[in-house]
Image (tube, rainbow, N blue to C red; front, side):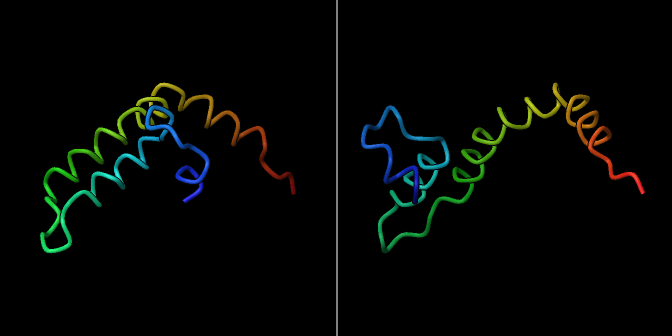
Length: 70
């Protein structure tokens, strides 16, 4: 709900909020179009997944450096 409260303009809304609007756009008497919802979810997930794949060594190095010595 926070992105909905903070952003008033459509161009400043997050992808997740757009996905929620896409889900809510179906009428109250219709079932959501699940194949389209899953395709939209993959499109929203792709940038995050790509950043993780390309920066994975930095994530692993950060975890290794922050290890607790016993």
